[in-house]
Length: 84
Length: 223
Image (cartoon, rainbow over all chains, first blue to last red; front, side, top):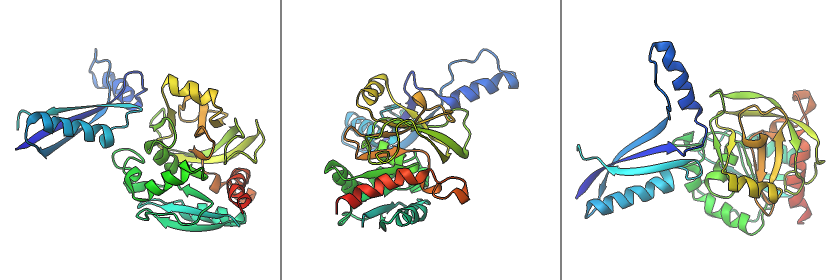
């Protein structure tokens, strides 16, 4: 089977996020108030051949931790893209 | 004469400057393409600045998987001197040869300017010829140069004297003003500033010489 997977990579809690902070500061100037805790990250979408959804997810999580994220500063979470 | 290899990744752009600096200091420089699987008979390796593999994903993230990096890791594990400059420093942290990570600069600006560095340890192959506490003017040229690590890593860096260079006036938000770190043994060093661009007072500063002299000299001493 072929499974669609999404991986989200975000900075770990406590790691400074200058990009998120800059976006947060820009929002009030556009008239958006009350927005806080903005964190910027990356999203990856791909397909994996696997014999079960569990195995597809395990492969995705493994490659996300090995390549798509830097575990020193980032967390990576893989999930199945149920919509596709 | 010390034989220093300079690794060329697709997107490296400081390899000729690094090689020229090595030769000015009496060493011989050899360019090594990233697809090489062995380093040959070398006394030291430099990973130069640039944008290896386009800096896609994260700086250094893809370069880490270049075939030559297995040879660099083996060379480092055997005690061989390894120096990562700017993008080369990012590659070494991604490869796990140096602790920590380099994040986007505080303020999200690309910085290209002279900086004043303070020699914080002389226990590394890069700083062994320098004087503890000396101030050196060396330029930086980076977007992701803010040195980051967790508290546990930071404590071990301090305890093991691995912080080799600090910025006098922190330009990028690096933790504890860190500009360069070494591994525990001191034979692998990375720094964001470019000592190979500070080789002549006619061009702004010659303060990079004492750093690279130390590095090239390690190899010379081996012969």
